[in-house]
Length: 136
Image (cartoon, rainbow, N blue to C red; front, top):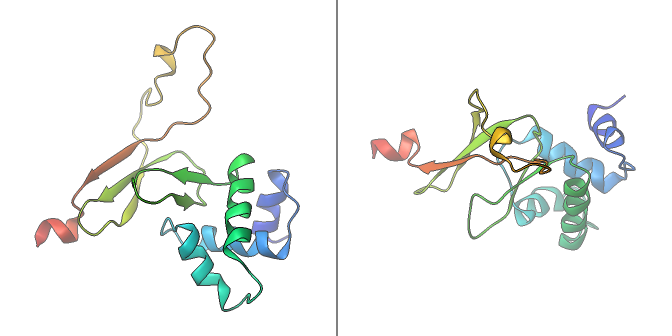
């Protein structure tokens, strides 16, 4: 079975042509795209695809925990098809977002949560200058 279809089904999502294409794009491109970037990348191969369909599909994928939503950029929401625990680094100059291995330890502060609180998602963001921009 196709890994993308399997991923969608695992998260309780019926695999339509559009959902498979969007999830495949996210899984194959680790560039943390925005709605517009996904739309532009897929539109030529899928002329009937709309931005609304992309947005609605991403909302469903988020709701079912099939992707991660990044709010590291104050101007744009970015999407990540890799749901394994990891952090993100955004270069302040070129705006590129990089995956960073998650450090060991209690990064989501579960031990500091008040009684009865349940952590469901942890987002760890760094910013600064990437290696290319730091050298310039």
